[in-house]
Length: 281
Image (tube, rainbow, N blue to C red; front, top):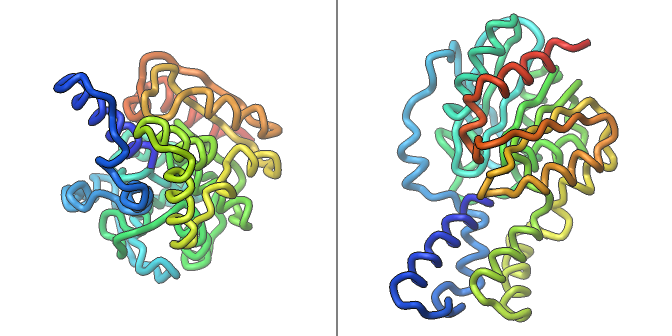
């Protein structure tokens, strides 16, 4: 979701550079933009063909969002990995390998409408409900949930809905859905009527962006949380993580420098922080 916003912004910069004209909202209809918040780029999904070297077994679990692909490996307490929008389990490979080396078992899902899972459209609430159904299908509580970007929003929503986990790691988390709506509307020069059309379109598809709010969910959650974010993240600003951490009692916030939105997933310092957190009683 937030990646789409950044891509749109980059596209706007290219247009300004070419003709030095202001961006007109007619280029993208509000409904079209709203649908992009629900529709992963199929070209990016087609490119995800590898499972990862760590995978020992795979299965499909039936959810209301369709069949969801789950990759698993290892023995021991279960750590669930939840990738971000237009991401994949490959994003977590260095973290997963380090987690397995510490004696944990690992499961990683392809979100609905991503990778090998079914669907063409999805949303944070739909993915959160699917995560609950996956936990039921696996028949096992999660020792820790490790989530990146949109996956952090999904995990927070799922925890508030009753997902059972002992701890959570949120990497580059968003704050609330309306941040993305407001940013996109401003970037495209939309007036209030066009902005409201975006919101109405999302509600038409069962998503009320006002109620998709990780910062608000954090006020109701008390399990230990490790939150990491880089100061140069151009997809989701670091203030989002700072706000979530401030609202989450018992969380620990680790600010990072120069690691962007995705590079931190393979960073040695981040991996050490996460592995240490997994090992804490």
